[in-house]
Image 1 (tube, one colour):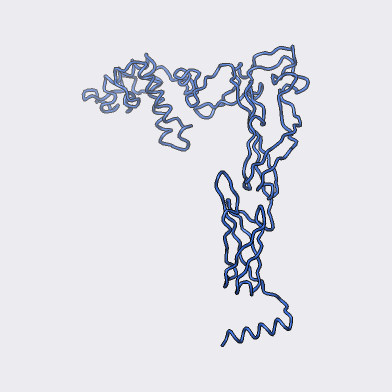
Image 2 (cartoon, helix red, strand yellow):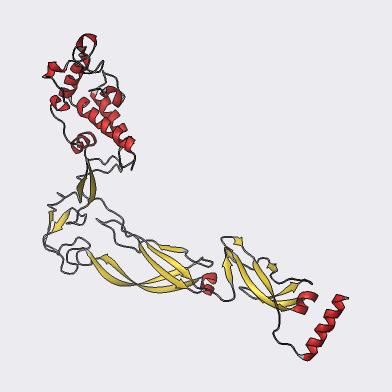
Length: 370
């Protein structure tokens, strides 16, 4: 025995019982494995803290422990003959010492129950009370819109097949007038605990579905689940300028809550179709325009279609293929941020030309060589 439990808990030897309990609560929350997943050092520290409180938190065990400290159990170990130098002679305790000699320890769960009561040390919730209302989970769907609809915004009507509270039992799962009884599996708590090593994890009770009670007779419409599937027409407003993969959330259109809790949300992921003419990057729009060789050399003005209208674009003389020209303010305006339209120039080279065109090009080639 080499651990000083007072040092482990960080309290003085004359610490009051409430101070010991307070220190243990603080350290247990800090080093609990659920807060330190995969941290072996924290796990070892947590076991050490719990071991210390098993002794110091019990008046009888603490008294015996203090007596062993008085005989020098922490001065020089248990070696024989150490008593005269502050050591400890195990022969005084029958030749050996085990913590079980202090009266036996309870389980970790018993310790936490006595220290934290019905409180979950992480959420602050209390066990054993009437099940609390819980918000329903979200529903997620995908919705496809065209590129043009994503630019201007649109409205879509869909038929949603979703669970709703049963209109006969109002979600209780019982046939009206049949009464309820406390769930025998969770004793009315609405949750059950599963052992995981030295710890327990709380989950909604599978028998009463977290309600804490079971019906005298199951509702004939929902078979006791409190839920029925129904088709519902939903109008969805798609905002102008939404990106591919953007989300629209409709509050209260998701799955029904438990124990009178509110419904979850409906989350729509918008899939935007492609457009052959326009490409979008952020708030900017990209297009391509073909021009002839003379237009590129001499310069010209060409009509360009934008998202809202057709405008004239000036082509500077000597423009090269691949040049990007900007039309300011002709992109998207989203949340006050305005984009531009970029036009990439592609010089078109004809595959076939007339004899006259060939003659002119040859003459031009000669003049450019001179």
